[in-house]
Length: 131
Image (cartoon, rainbow, N blue to C red; front, side):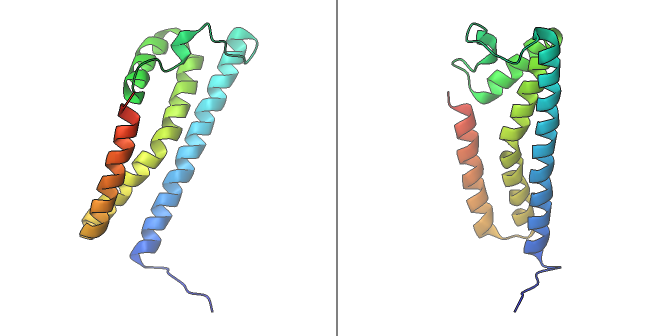
């Protein structure tokens, strides 16, 4: 026997989250491919060497690295900017997923799951901000 959950709250949340995750992956993929094409057109290869230290996170948290890269590379190297933004979208997609779940559970006044999602949100935030 097949159970149908159409119309239930959980089904709507699962649908919203699935579309959110799919959109995040597709946007990230498009940004990455655009960055790779631009990088190849600029350097005629796709190799990134260790000599270019600006492409690596060095003693920074994720948000500082992202801000510095967008500020610095936005004017100089659009290929690196697209690649960085693609990775940022991919990394932040689960973060937005947890925020969406938090908003949904708060709206439904399901405080048990609100506390769980707040805990998960704190863990993700701390993991992105710690060096």
